[in-house]
Structure formats: structure tokens, C-alpha cells
Amino acid sequence: MLFGHGDDFYNASNEIKINYSSNVWHGANLAPLRAHLYARFEAVTRYPEPDAGSLKRLIAHQTAIGEENLIVTNGSITAFYLIAQAWAGARSTILYPTFAEYEDACALYGHRLTFVPTSTALSDLALEGQTFCWICNPNNPDGKLWSRAALWELIAKHPQTLFVVDQAYVAFTAEPLLQPSDTARLKNLILIQSISKAYDMPGLRIGYLIAAPEIVHKIKPYVIPWSVNALAIEAGTYILTHPEQFTLPLEQWQRETTELIAALNRLHTLEALPTATTFFLVRLRQGKASALKTYLLQQHGILIRDASNFRGLDESYFRLSTQPPAQNHHLLQALHAWR
Image (cartoon, rainbow, N blue to C red; front, side, top):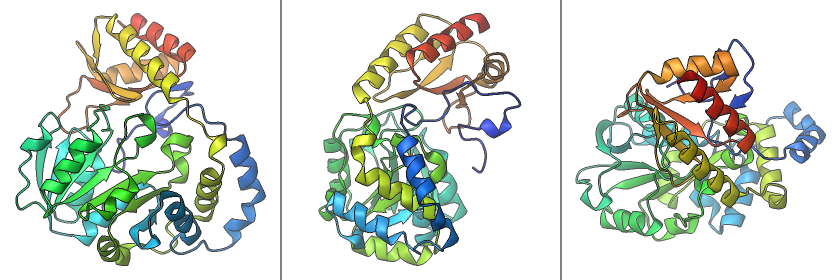
């Protein structure tokens, strides 16, 4: 899906004042990072490392895994396409609704696809003959969360299936999730992580995959040289070596999310669905999300994510990522006026 994701500001004809459409932390102080990148700007006059080697070594050190377990990618989305390409023609099960790029990557490389609703109990998944099972945790778009214990049991139960577990939103929950070191015992686990979401810098595209060395070895031939640019390497290195500058107040953000969901449900014309994280789905009781999106953008400068193009969702659904209380109040007023 080249287009159709959130944060589609490029389609807006007027100013976006409040952005609810992108699942990133909105309060990061990027001034120190900006100063660092200005100071390192000459890096763009040279080719970057072909494999983002310095950043790979730093991630390996900080996660206590070997470099042979790791591939740094141009955003986590690139990892999905590399995996699908390395196993072209495989059989893949995808839990839905979820991020569309799993399906798109698999379809591009001829995977035979099976779709299972996320409401299905993990213990009931039928994975015989399946090469892959794709799971987003926490799940995009609804914020559903599977416990570490439940996923561990599932992965261990099906050693013949490779599990791609996308943890791009791992920073947006306090619940313990799968760890990079788990790939040492779960040889059929491919863990996908992002350095972009929790630091409000999705435009730099920094992600990585972690897996057993034999899996990494199979994927490596498909990695395009220099696919992670020089500024992204500099930014990723700076963030990981200055964690104190990027503290995410998760408890406060989740509390504000709970308050926003409760306030939305008091409007009665829509239903805000529960979430385990800081983004969530909303279902209109009447009307289309596309019409609401147009209204909010044109009349209030508010951008939401029309979620009707997620497999399994209809035209009544949209997604929100909680913003600061003052902006949430403005959204509520706009929705009241629309009603």
C-alpha cells in the first residue's frame, strides 16, 4: 500500500494543527538531536555504511545479542518485505485487522495467504503447513495486546512455523513483551523493532529485525546496500546513547488515553474501543469515517486516520493516537459540532 496510511498530510490543502493519525509519541524534545544532526551534516557528503554497521553494533551491544542476529533496515516496513522476498512463495497466516504491509509484502512475493481474526484465541490457531505467522503486538490499529507468556507458548508449540512479531509499539505499553534475547531459545522467532515511533521521528525510517543467525543469513542477500541513510544512522546512534533525553511519560499518556476514550463514549454517536496502549479505534454509529476526516481537516485542521482500508474493518472506523489534553478537548468540541 503505497498510499492509504495515516499521517497523509501531503494530501491536505490547509494547515494541519493537530495530528491524531500517526502512532508516534508527540512530546519528544528533538532540539538536542537537531543540533547533533546539524553538527554531523557533512555525513551526507559520503556514502553511509552499506549495512549501517556502527548502528548495528550499538544495538547488538545494548540488547545483548550478537551482530549475526541483527539486520538494520530502512524502517521496520523494509524488514517485512525482505522476509517475504527471502521466502517467496511461502504460506503465511496473518492475524487481522492489522498493518496492511504484511499482506502487501507477502502478496508481492507470491505467498499463499490465510487470514485469521485477532479475536481468535492463540491456542486455537491452526498453523499446520504454514511457513509464517505474522503478528503485530501491540496491534495496529486497535491496540490489542498479547502477553509475552501467551506468545512464547504459541511460538514454542509450532516450531515448524516462523513467527514474525512486529513490536514497533513496544514502548507504548508497560507490559513485558518478547525480548531480543528470546530469539536465542525461540529459533523460529523473527522480532521486528522500531527506533522511530517513541522518538517522534518516523521520517528518518529506522528499524531492525532480530532472529537466529541462520534466518538472518537467509535474509541478508536481499538487503540493498546503503538502504539506511547517513543521517538516520547518526540519529539512531545519538538516541540510543542519550536515552535520558528521550524519556516517554507512558503512565501519563495512557491515563490521558483512558480519559479521552471515556469522553468520546459520552458523545453517544460513536464508540471508542478499549486499548492496551495509546492509540485506539473509534466506530461511528452513523456516517462514514471518510466524511468525518474531511470535515475535521477542513473545518478544524485536525487529521485522523480513516481506518476503513484495514482488512476486517468497514467505513465507520477511524483511529486516534492520543494527543495532549488541550488538543483532545478541541477534538471533542469538533466532534460535538459535527454531531
